[in-house]
Length: 255
Image 1: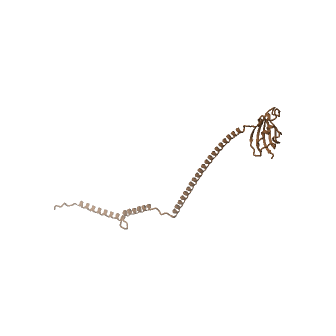
Image 2 (image 1 turned 30 degrees about the vertical axis):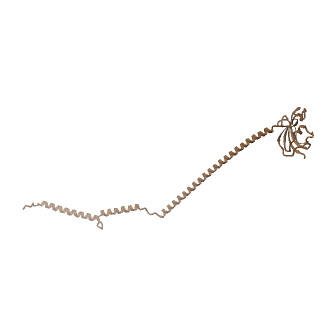
Image 3 (image 1 turned 120 degrees about the horizontal axis):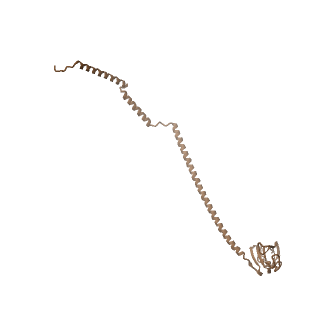
């Protein structure tokens, strides 16, 4: 006999195990059938592929830009035109500012040059004035020196005439004034606007005839006539024996 005889309880357990395995297989088969699509693929595979396709589509959509519309192109062109216009406007403004600055600098340079020119002219004028004053002072000093003639008569030409020269025994006309003490502030003793006489014929005092020698028409001369060539000791208003101060302008000399 040698084999171990299985009892009834072991057989029941095997039967129950086989039955459970069959039910398990049937349940698994139903779940597989429910998870498959029409093509026989499992729903998980289909879902995974669908998710992958959607992700790929989304990545392509994100990577590739949306096509530009006609309106977007128009706006872009308008922006470019506006930028160019602003750029040109700015360039013109800068050029205008440069021209204004150059004009300002030129004007300042011109004003500076004119100022220097005026200063130079003023300096030259001042130098010329000083020179003239110096010359005038020198001339005045020289002209203030009376020249002596006969009998103590002295003369000083204030102005040298350019007309005919006086001649003896020819009729002349003069304008004169006679003062006491000096030629400028002294008391006026006698005066005439148009006095006529014949030179050298004794019609006037001797100092008058002596003092007019060499004068030309248009000239002005001052005379200092002492008493010996004038009225001697007679008092004609300047005092007895006083010097006489004449200022004479020669108006006419007869031909």
